[in-house]
Amino acid sequence: MSNPAIKVSNLSKRYRIGLKKKPHGLLSQQLTNAIIEPFHIMGRMGKPPAPESIIWALRDVNFEINAGEVVGIIGRNGAGKSTLLKIMSRVTEPTEGRIETWGRMGSLLEVGTGFHPELTGRENVYLNGAILGMRRKEIDSKFEEIIDFAGIDKFLDTPVKRYSSGMYVRLAFSIAAHLEPQILLVDEVLAVGDVEFQKKCLGKMESVVSEGRTIIFVSHQLNSIRKLCSRCIWLDDGKIKMEGPTAHVVSSYESAWLTKSKEGTVASEHQKNVSHFTDWEILEGRGEESNWLSTTGPLKVKFTAWVHKKMSAGLQGIALWDDDGQLMWGSSINNLKLDKGLHEFVYDLPELPLRPGLYHWQLSLWDGNEVLDNWFAIPSMMIATSPHFQSKDWAGVLNVPCEVKINAIG
Image (cartoon, rainbow, N blue to C red; front, top):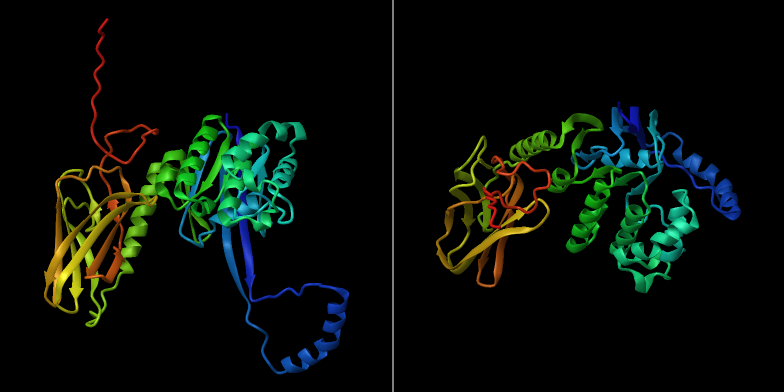
């Protein structure tokens, strides 16, 4: 028998673009507006009204999330992810449909949402706890832990309007995670913090997951979605494109994203006065597409560059990044002597045993101290190998086989 935490029924959200609402303002401003409005009307006579358009950020969205589930929401920018979380957290109202929730809800949306700018960090902790329906004793018991995690003890009694975006995020996440709501909504704001704090947040979220609380996690970091979420919802143009087990939905999303990226990469005329990389492909080890790697074994990858003038002391650098922005591998070739024209750089790697997912090649070309090009290769590389580990708790980035033998020695 299901135990629902969130039920979304026929949810839609419409925005009107081009329609301005006039602020009421002070009495003096209202009197001024009353005086000058007839002149504005005269100026507008004979002119068509300002254009207005309607955008549906969400359209007929339906799903149900059970208590204790960890659900990821993915999709490109503008797909409706943040709008969905805003409606869930009551920041904005739906145009149509409804959301039912069971349990105390905490949310981490845009930087500063839920904070009063004039209040100090200390005061905002208690304010957010009160909003969640907590008693002061409950907040007191968590206070030191919240501040320690956020690392803002020196600025605890400073108004949060003076906080940097990173300080905002650290405090907001710490409040949301430690005040123990039954339902936690987390948007992509973790991208604002530094890498070490992002790792710290993901570790805390794993702890929250183990406590059986319900989490809805919006992120572009697909490896984090894979690691944390058992189920995934793919939004596209305000509608649910796919819903199901995380591995299946994320793989389908990556495949569609890569195909669109490739279609959008149109070969243009070589700029004869600019040295630049033009394209790339996997020669050996490729899967369904030229940018799919289907084996952890030998890999041969080719990058093509146009050199607009002769080089006598060139440098070509290469780096491979994962989808979370961690450097996987890097190298460089020094003292290059290249003539003007088109050149191929072919790299032979004996193996690349990385876990499945999206990776990004970065290529650079230098002539002496001058940077000629610094290119993030499009489309990204999709590693579509079969993982040696099926465990959900697979940590790290390497995809290598491992056998364990246990022997009794005493």
